[in-house]
Length: 245
Image 1: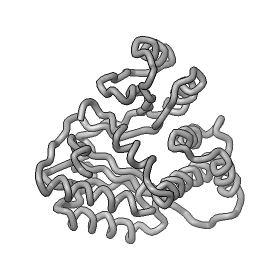
Image 2 (image 1 turned 90 degrees about the vertical axis):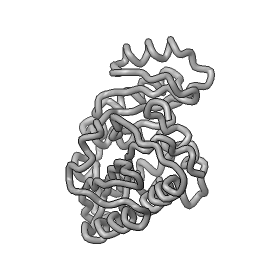
Image 3 (image 1 turned 180 degrees about the vertical axis):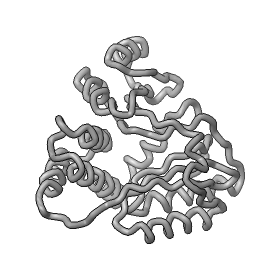
Image 4 (image 1 turned 90 degrees about the horizontal axis):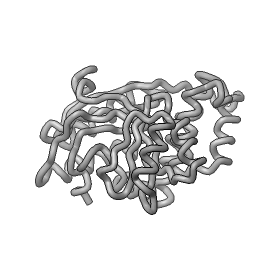
């Protein structure tokens, strides 16, 4: 996979069944609720909420849903207390994996994560076991169709982007500071660009290529993580993810 762009993977997720889309909405809704409880319901004064809203909009979560979740979280509608936890581990052939979770039951989620690693030829590691292979960056992907490369590069850099990666024909990959994702996504949208993904990501420094059965094992492991409501995101350095069908 060239660069870090996972547009083909994101596109597949966006085109999945209604149930799969509903699960994505539920996970983002949980992130919004946690952000509201931590920093308030006004995105102008809550940068974390502002970033999650940008992520939600890029994932096509309806504005009505976003507003409803914010209002509910700002009230007394839910007593659930969620904890943010990062798990680290290895997939088949040493693929590095970082798992972000929001859970109201640490033991349940840790057990599930360990099971997924074990089931598909990996193993859960200790804190810091793979994180050194990643850097935290803001990543905004813009649909490249009918977009002039030079113009979007100039626009993004003037708007504060740290880098613009153009080696994927389908999207332009715009890198920002971790807390600048929402502002960049908003600026691009207002300028008429189609933002297809906007979030802070763990970006790997190097990639690992898989062959044979390891491709199937890694693909199924990622599906298990994605199907778990406690898991918000999974980051990895699997190079040829597109080989999994």
